[in-house]
Image 1 (cartoon, rainbow, N blue to C red):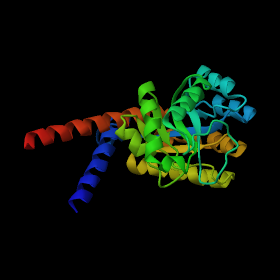
Image 2: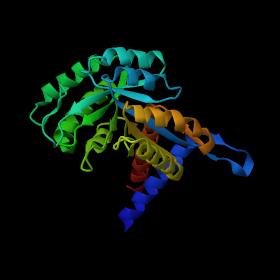
Image 3: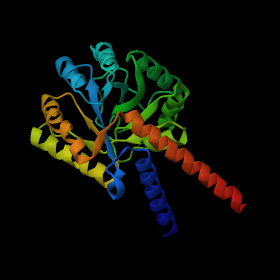
Length: 272
């Protein structure tokens, strides 16, 4: 019971802390924190025209670029030119077997090969400041390989977003252990590629943000996703929600994790 209470206390504390780092709206008694969402567009590098259209949206979306896609460098540079955040979308081994992508991190690789593959992938995505996993439902379950990944991420001062392609993923937890700024995906917007379904998932993302103050969604450069974002992103202001680059949420969370660790150390010192 005590563990549960401490866990709830930490979650509440993190929520309140995140709220303090967010803009506020209203006056007097009506002042309340403005919820934030971040939306990452995965698989940038293949669908060139859809990628360009996504990048041209007048919104602070974040773009995750596949390192070996034919237009990876071109679209990464275009996103950066538009002032948008760029990430590496790193292929990792899934439970489904082989992947059509090159340079996949897999469970048979040794640490030096994992590190080399990461370095080569980042070199192919100009302006990338972090990474999320492409597939990876198998690899993200492996603590050893995730530790190798996060040590290199820490060394290069990158952040990590756990796409949560598996409920058994340990990637986010190990990122925190290694001191890497990290966060997890809450909603896949277009798991079903249908405008009605995508709108429903967008609304779910909004409701989650309204409930806890923040949320992370992932979409893809499908025409249906683009149409929904064009339609629904302008409504966020009226819902008291701000769309922010993913690094803003990660940096806020890092502050909270650091402060919590410092307070725990101080409490330990005072009681011993």
